Length: 178
Image (spheres, rainbow, N blue to C red):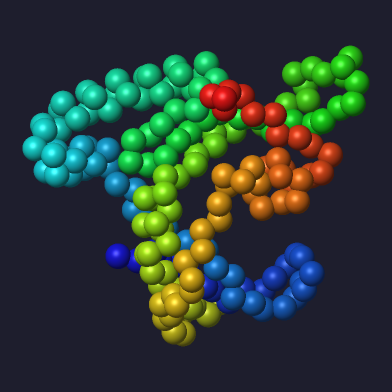
């Protein structure tokens, strides 16, 4: 099993080097798996009927949505945890605090150690293409498998540690369960 990536040579139109051709990487998009196939596969692995698995999953989904909107961090067994959050501007004065400061609502997913280990141990296969889509070469990863870790509070790897690239914004999380 491997994660597939495409590196295609493109003419850069913006950024530091407009007019320069560089290889730009993107995921090689897979075909979405149908929900019924997921339940059928889970049924095969567990010995529980697909209908029972679907009913349990639907019920769990209802509970997850309800608890998340109440501000809880929700465990997703075997996967990690999820919670809702917002991205907002920071203000100094109490009088300036209002809902218009919220720019977006977010879903924050923190993968479990097992999921991180699976990603770390999965190879990456890069297919290099020219501008016309002709395959130039294929490369399989030999990297260390480092995983970006959001648990240190620095969700996007930026310096202000609040998940924003704008230092004038703060990330006000709803319900960390703490």
